[in-house]
Amino acid sequence: MKGFDVITALKELISENVIIVSSNGNISREVFNLLPQPQVYLRGSMGLPVPIGLGLALANPDKQILVITGDGNFLMGFNSSVTTAFYKPKNLKILILDNNKYFTTGGQETVSSALDFGSFLNSLNIGYSESKQAKKEKVKNNLIEFLKSKSFSILHLQIDSGKLQLENIPWQPKEITQRIVERLTK
Image (cartoon, rainbow, N blue to C red; front, side, top):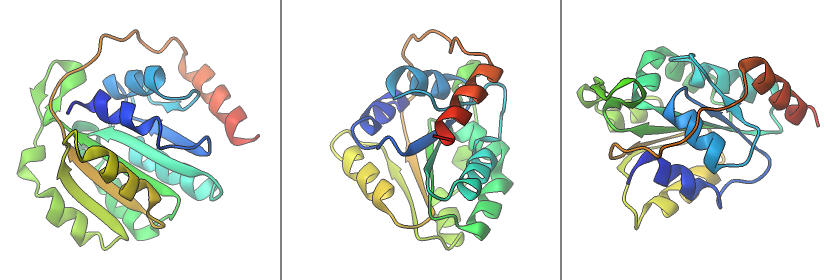
C-alpha cells in the first residue's frame, strides 16, 4: 500500500473531533485533498509534526490529535517522540508512514532501515505501539485498533512509495493558522 491509500482509509474512521497535524510535502497535500478540512498542514516544518501535535494535545485535552508523518520527518524530530512518551497525552496518536525515502524531495533514501521500529516503540513504554507492513487486507483493522486506543499511541506502517498528482495547498501558513484556530475555538 502507498501512503495515500492509508490516508484514504482514515476518512471513514475519523470523527469531526479529530484534529490532524500533517507533515510537510506529499503527506500534507494528501491530507488536504483526501480528508476533511481544515487541518494543520505543515509547510517547511521538517521534524516538527510530533512536537506540534504534543503541544496541541496538551493545550486541547478535549480534542483528539492525530499526527500523520513520514519516516524522514519523524527521524528529523526523533527526540520529540521520547518527550511525547514522557507526557503520554491520551488524546494524541502518531501515524508514521515509512517508505524509507524523502519522497517529497526526490526519493533519497532515509536511514529508517537502520532503526528497529518495533524495539524502539516498545522501549517507549506507552499504551499502544506497533510496527507493521501496510497490507490492503489488514490496514483498516490496524487503523481501527490504533485509533480506538485509550492511551497515547504510535503506529508505524511500512508502505510502498507512490504519490497522487495533487495541487499544492492553496492556503498560506497565516490562513492555515486562522482556519485551525477557528476550528479549535468552536
